[in-house]
Amino acid sequence: MVIDGIYYALALTAGGAAVWYLSRPVFGMPLFLLALFCLYFFRDPDRAIPDGPVAVSPADGKVVSIHNDGGPSTRISIFLNVFDVHVNRAPMEGKITNLDYKKGQFLVASREVASSENERNIVTIEGAGTTVIFSQIAGLIARRIVFYKKLGDRVAKGERVGLIKFGSRVDVFLGPEWEIAVQTGQRVAGGSSILARRRAG
Image 1 (spheres, rainbow, N blue to C red):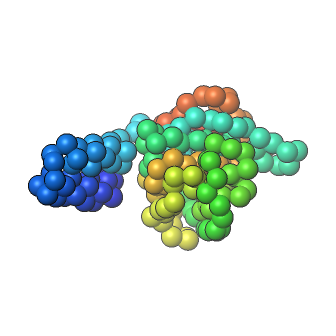
Image 2 (cartoon, helix red, strand yellow; image 1 turned 90 degrees about the vertical axis):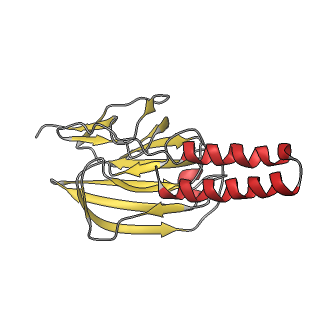
């Protein structure tokens, strides 16, 4: 459980209790239900991290796009709805060599334009002769991006590194040394689903 969920749930429960006491009990029920939803939303299950030269998904969700515009990298876009786990994980082991926070819009995160127009936090990880970049992208409802790590920190593959509060999107950029292992429409789990495998040689 992410601690934020407990704070939200306690605040909503207190509000529901106040409404229950000052008005009719039925009017407090929506706040109690929202408190339960916050506990569900901010869940943080343990995951089995796969071994070997693989890049794992940084988030739970649905692969909505696999895009290559002819350049050296392929972008995998994952959409997180409000029922997905929103804890983000490092796609590979390495050192954080760049952090770039960009302000932007809060368009629906499942749209292609969200990758370039929405508010986002771009993280570069380097290790074992390769670089993987991933972006935490805010959405229509998601207005808060959280990142726990600092520039220069080392992260393990599948390690928890942050979260995006409520529906959102994560983009992963992989170079030609990676063989993509997912398809559009596939559901993935953060930290345990393999997005790509490192090519031999």
